[in-house]
Length: 335
Image (cartoon, rainbow, N blue to C red; front, top):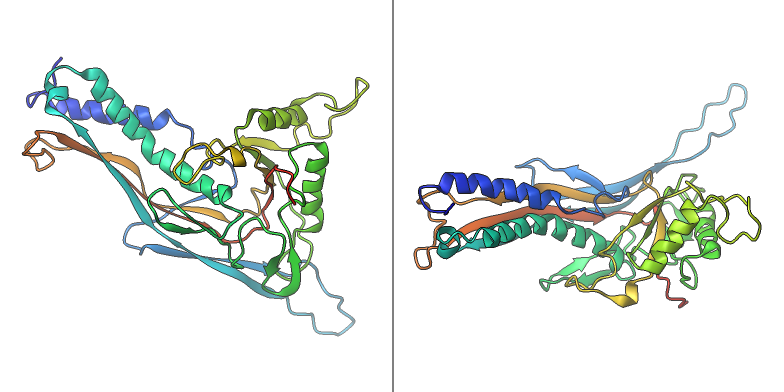
């Protein structure tokens, strides 16, 4: 079958089917991680959203006979603003591809286009962890991306501040060990001793996710701890593995990358634990990734080359308000 002006409508219908096939062939690891909150945003409601933490005190106060009850405390935490931006690319389908039965080339171009939108969002989300040890980074397009959380510190830091208390907390494990039983227990100690509300009171919440890069050694170590029926380090059979089923393991293949999306081996051992309940990591979706096909005899056909342009577009924003929901180690053993 040849693609020509007579069969244009069928070709465009095919293009949409191929687009969906390409879109569904990828796995958005970060978006599906459990600690990214996907927030749909309606049209005509502006290009920003403001997010703020808020806490109440954890405990009641004593009330004597006839005494007035104490007033509950409310403390607003830090605020971050999410700003929408668009990403885009045009896919050119040449006259020869349409009329010389170059079906594989057409299929490849449109299928790859279907992957690029979700992949771009996944990379941008991943880079909030990749560059979580800094307050900003320069992305693949030369833009400066703000990665600071509400207290103006980097996401992974040793002395985060609170809005209603002089206390500080750390969420980066000291000495940055590789994933191991001792390191995981150290990470859990951060949960117990370094998780606060804005008043400086201990926050009791479940950390249910362990996340790693796709480094084989780190991934396999995590699987050993989470899936073994007995303790992976136990000498005798029948020793209970206390980590079995305790966490959901999330593998994030785009965390150990450069700003351009190339492999960055210096970050291959990044890992941590996170709380799906406490998370303040938001993805605002103004314009979901989609394909805009050309129409017959429209200006989507280039008069100089006879190419057709299929437009891939998406619009979204990313915001991380606080740092108390995640604990981190770079795995490089450096203090």
